Image (cartoon, rainbow, N blue to C red; front, side, top):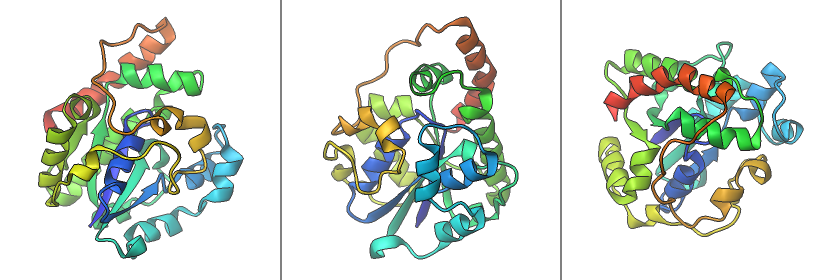
Length: 237
């Protein structure tokens, strides 16, 4: 099975990748389209040159690899995808060959976290619009709504949340998914030194999040822009 987990940045996505990697039967791939996205858009991201140099800039080749043989002869292939990387110029036909899941987080928490790593994000930087578009596309292709999981639910009760997700995917849950060793991982993307310091310090899912953060007016406006896209997917969790 090839599992494509679609989320925006700062959304528990790396911890989820670590969780699936800890199973023992699952290969993982960290943000397959990141180099292609940066190459196509020229957008200024931290460590952009290193990301492009380490990745595959041709989106067609990336899509082919997503559907190709599962690495390390594993039975599962977990692909941590960023929704913002799927720009309109990229062919999305490969989605039909994947088991697509959507990971959401309240935009106030996303913006508060993202702005600490990269200033002045825009609505397109945080991926909510693209996530809703991809969700609709997958639902149309398959005839049913794909699974949606909220990061707040995972952090509140990791075992139960992952048990439910595995049941929806038709794969067994294992206790191994609840913990991992601290530190960098061999499958981390080249951008890990900038973005992954908190998750590298972790050995499992963090405690539940507190109340929504207070934000400056420009960031609160960004949250307001993203909120409806987030709320659209909540009924499918």
